[in-house]
Image (tube, rainbow, N blue to C red; front, side, top):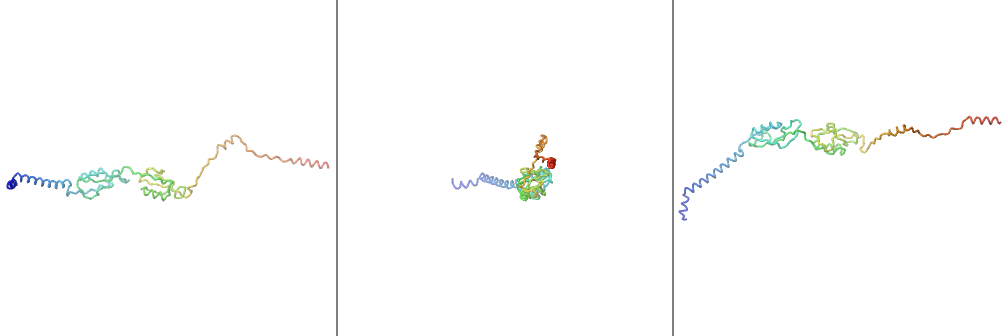
Length: 236
């Protein structure tokens, strides 16, 4: 192929047509990618997050969906003053701006009060130790109740007047009353109650047993001495 023939190919309309078509395809792809990304990511669009705290989940879902947003439960908590299913927390928070389709994660109020397992503090710790441990676990404590026993020693725990033991599930909003010794009885003291043997006593009475007494002999009669003296005087 001569140089003139090679240069002549660049003058071909077919070649330039293909090059122009390729350029148009590249430009179209670039523009499509640019605007497609904006549409997909909602570039420049922002929606303020509504305040749905303390609203029922059904009402909150309706509000969020009407704005083009989504809602999803991520956790549960418990607030006694709020109805079950009420929104306790939301992420993102109210007022933040997000794009359409964004998910709002919420924490809702549980139907029942959560429970905590009571640790082994009864007859196993002092009042100070028990209060520190129970408070750290999230229990609510009332005024301790004094009972006879070693001073400041924990003898029991009651909830709503009912005795509880280690391992019981206690609602977190329940108030625990610790029964603590008032110092009137030492821990090492034991009181043994012995029932009287009434049966044996009755048996003795019914059998007619009589106590044995020692018999003391009767001293000689005084009249005999008097007679002896009279006989002596008569002999004289």
